[in-house]
Image 1 (tube, rainbow, N blue to C red):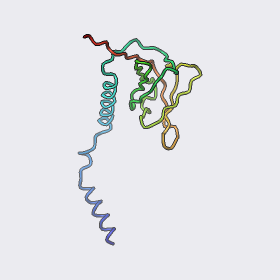
Image 2 (cartoon, rainbow, N blue to C red):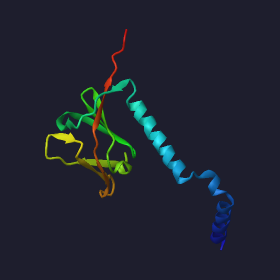
Image 3 (cartoon, rainbow, N blue to C red):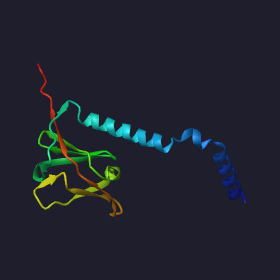
Image 4 (cartoon, rainbow, N blue to C red):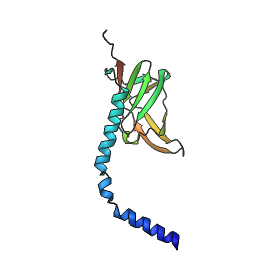
Length: 143
């Protein structure tokens, strides 16, 4: 009976701690995630200026991509970073997942869809319909 009394004591202790004081509401959690994502975007785009959005970027020139949770995908093409804020499905963007893109052309365009695949279980966790690509180029420093 000793293990059972320990379990009951632990349950009583958990019940005493006010859970609502330590937990954020769903709206507060969403706002905190959005603020964290925007901070990550600001850091990634530091020292760069936005250009005119484009509909497509060349696939064979993409060096890397970075997912900003529930917000955007940043593609590096040469010295330019292209930010894509999906038109639909941005909430399924997760940097723990693998992004799979299928196109029929040699370009990634604003009408394409990317699928998000769980990296461990290999099942689809969501998808995102891409929007326009906003180029961010480094600002020439005046010396």
